[in-house]
Image 1 (cartoon, rainbow, N blue to C red):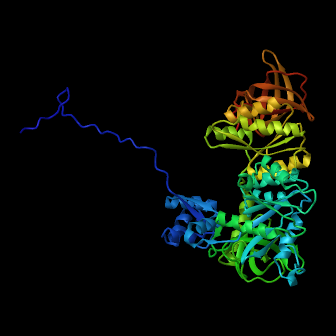
Image 2: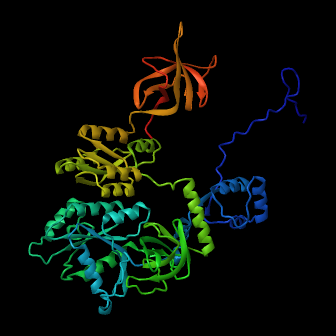
Image 3: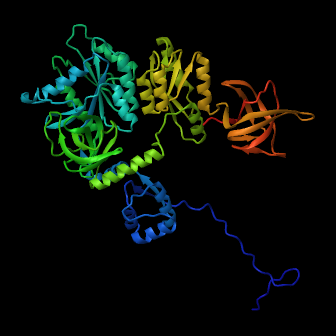
Length: 608
């Protein structure tokens, strides 16, 4: 059968049109994590590349390196381009944690770590002493040589670690640094006093950290003790005890008479079992610094609570920007310790400088690696400050709502009187929407305190003040911790602003962006043109149509706009520092040589 040829209208043979393939967006390259402290040789071996080949490629790109050099962010980007893989640096500590919890079959139960909190004079110290004295041998009772910030007790052949913090501020400071070391909080409430201001604060701090609470109602030996009243007060704070159908474990004790201390320890172990606390005892050891000091005989000392692995003398370590080799370890009695596994607190000798509380302590293969990582971190810190996750501002909230990221706005409320506190505590959650829930972490009377700022920092919360003040020291701390404090005197303004923020409807903000300064040298009054200022640009740049503040001395005389700008005889759009120019202003009055023109632009920007 004869095939017919397809022709065009002109009779020429038709050619098939090539149909362009429509391709979707390029697939993102896989991101591969590289452990901080890796060398060029380590990375080459990981990707099965000869170290020499990788070094040659880097040399061609202008990098003078050797196989033993540590990889910094700049080298990491260069290597990413060479091997066509997106690499990202993760800290040594992050990598070890990820490794440890990926090996689920090797995880072993560990003792619970407990912090005791509560109102001053409700018996925290007495309870600590009662637990300690009832669980140590008589010969050891007077043997504690120094306070190391934590200690262990043995009960029914099992251990419990207690962190001896001075209060909830210390608990939250550790958490603000990213160190979550507490598994359980014991809330001590006096049976005669009941729930007080610091009790409420302690509850807020524990709940914000998502740490389970066991309530110890203390001083039941007192004639005026009223445990039932305490339970009612706790229920108002959201802690409903088990006997009332809630989930909060409650033990009635007398620390002074050492009554029901065993029952309290039993409940700690029971809750620890429910939480299924586990750790990996064999990965390179990692812990957190609880306390540190400079000892006249021993040098820099740090109390480490071990979270992963097992510490032994002789191990090299990195701790923040400091490093060292464990020369010796001691328990709370000053006795040498040869090993310390998960949940064990020990005092460590061997730091090159005093470590900071809250820093992670990480064992590394040898002292040279520790030293190099320390130097790398110090150099990186000088280049750019360590990024810290900061609390939300209302502007941040708007931005996150637009991206669909935010589901909760944590808020701390401070008001002048108890009535206002109760009103705001009840009112603010009602402003929540389907997208954002307003969560009142804490509500109390009085001016904003250090504890409020620390809680806000650790919880990424906003502080709202109603008819209260912020002392200058607290304001400085808030700025340092990047905590936003919003003060109001009228409730509807407070609620209106929150409503708008939560609904994603904050008004645009007028932002002034500084451009530069020019100094007036001469003033020319020209026919048909008007006043022209002969100026020298002394900083930044001058831009036509920008806003101008006319300054004499330290006083702003008035504000206007640049209507014309010339360099020599040419009209220009901008003139930079060091050049002379002629400036025409929309409004000129009482100008003198020597006056300064501060140039800026105004922009309407959406919050965030």
